[in-house]
Length: 385
Ligand SMILES: [Zn+2]
Image 1: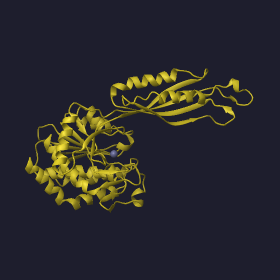
Image 2: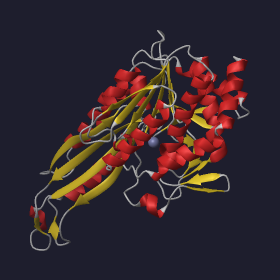
Image 3: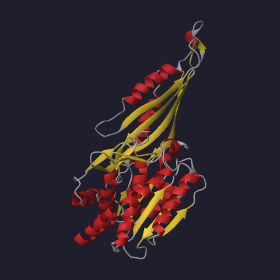
Image 4: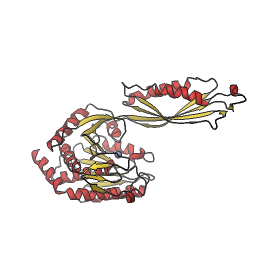
């Protein structure tokens, strides 16, 4: 074990410049989720890099979304594989690279997707290269990179394909954006979004207001009722994030709509959440109004599994062995593709990518030193599972 650890460290330290070059090349390819050609170009560049170590790589073509990449090392070894996960798309529109190219300054890297998550892709690829160089071949290592994570795979079946690729794996490490403060993610909330529409009766607000039935007043009661459903103890939160209704000040409004975001920790809560919202929809505060509720999307949570804590202990040990503090395993409200590897029954640790901050913003940055350290730790923990 000690040998392999040293070999990994020597490989990564010997390839610092190559890692920065690769990272820069990925960031310099414009690959917002809507830019299929750009995402596909990132996949092509990753494939090229993995070809140099003889890894077997397939590109899964998507019609309307960025392609998905699946690559494997030690394919023929008859053991359960370890999964490395990530995505190649960013949240940034075309033109961002020209405005804010990859830049290094004071030990930090800047540029669109530098943290979320081209740094993580760089870490995963070089971890595979380090393992190959060290001659480690105990089990297959499978890299799965989505092309449309930031838009929730709305135009592809990538989520289903991630589950298929994950099934039977012994562990999964998602190289998503790492968080400042030495943390990894062991659990993520799921997200449900709904639209609620109220129909009332329009009337002149001056001449015959008594004939009107205000959809906005009805909705006002409902907004408060929905916000009050939040259960902090259970970790279920309700947020009415958008509201609209009415047309002019001097008419009793006959329409009002809201968009609702619900975050929750366990799949088993969903039925109850839906029932509570239906309750609010069916409770009438202003007689003569009608309400409908529509589910717009459903992202499953990354639940904590029986094997999660054991896997976290190994990650902590691997980090410590390279001089980093032992990372704590935290719960966050935002989703990632780790939900699908967990749904496939695979213990998963998320946010193993490069550490940084302000992702999805122009100030996004990542720590260069931690690119190397976390690549070493990732490669090493693969050998520990
Ligand atoms: Zn991401």
